[in-house]
Amino acid sequence: MALLALVFYGLVALAVVAIGSFVGTMLALQVYHGDRSVSLDGLVRRVNNDTR
Image (cartoon, rainbow, N blue to C red; front, side, top):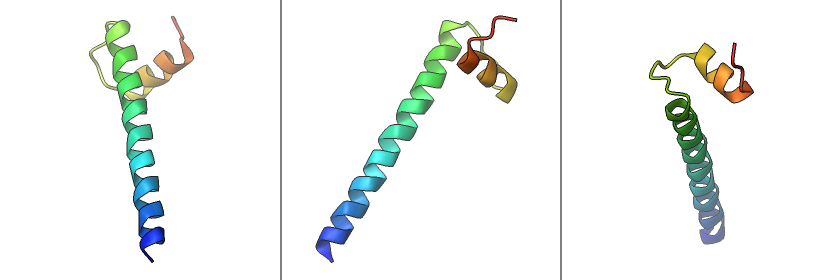
């Protein structure tokens, strides 16, 4: 039972790190492109490196 709890907490910690990394990358791209607006369209443009 303790091993199961340890594995569960490890997976939760990994998910938190992965989500934090994704959010940090999105914020860094937003600052790099000088865009202060938060929109799904802008997010997709930044991820796809679309300059139109």
